[in-house]
Amino acid sequence: MHECTGRAAPLADSCYPKHTWQAIARAKKARKERRAAEGSKQVDAMRIDPQAMEMGAGGGLKSKVLGEDEIELRWETADEVGNAGFLVQRRQGGQSDFETIASFENFAPLKTKGEAGGQYVYLDSESGLRPGSWVYRIVDCDQSGTKSAMCQKLVEIESGEETTQTIIVGVFFAAIAAACVGAGLFLDPIQTTSAGRGF
Image (cartoon, rainbow, N blue to C red; front, side, top):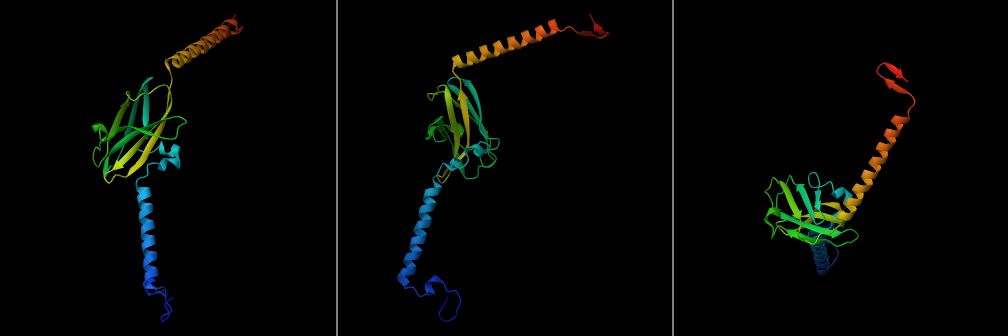
């Protein structure tokens, strides 16, 4: 409160010495700038809710396993105002750090398609991929250099042996099911026809 008027006084008119309120203002400004600098370059907003981020980017990040060492990634955007392009990052399941495997700076198809957005396709085939669990994410880079994680997806790659084993087990269970149905039809004492019961 101001001594004379009894109303709230601005900081400069308060009873603090001039150098004190200037120091407080400088400290607040420095703190605000530091927070902005730390937050503006952050990529990992996904650590809050990674499953929800699978729903980002239009329909989310879609993947298709083409082989033991090939994965196709697809995503689409609807608004890319101020966007420069995208980074494709990957980490192995159980690891915490992502590595950038492709960037709009050296791979032209990852550059922005304009303010209206568009569809993007990336084929990961020459980056040392092997069977296992992988997490892919797409990072949006704007023209000021700010990076933000946009969407991510867990991808499981089976080895050739695992795929063969899965097929063999599937065929085995299908054969057992067919044998049970055949035995049931053969052993059923009540046979029915379109004319009724037949013995």
